Image: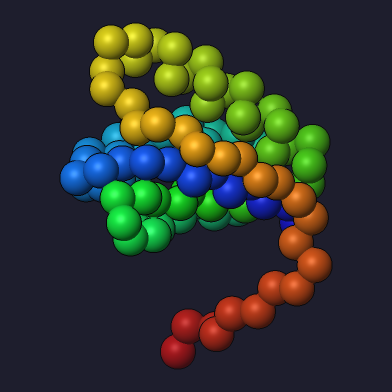
Length: 99
């Protein structure tokens, strides 16, 4: 699996970012082949981290293009400041199975 991690400066607009993700971006990502998961994390100090998980690097790159195309349709909408992007192969994955 492959993940991309985006760090954002959101100030007091974390809920706005979360709403945008849930109602706009996530539906776009769900349509992308290889999509596994998407998370918005409150990183404190006015920052947020978004984490996208895909089956492969190729599917992550293809979905990133679709996400960027979607964002272009929102011209004029306030977006938080993108501080950093990191991406790479997941080398260890663990989770608790639902009970």
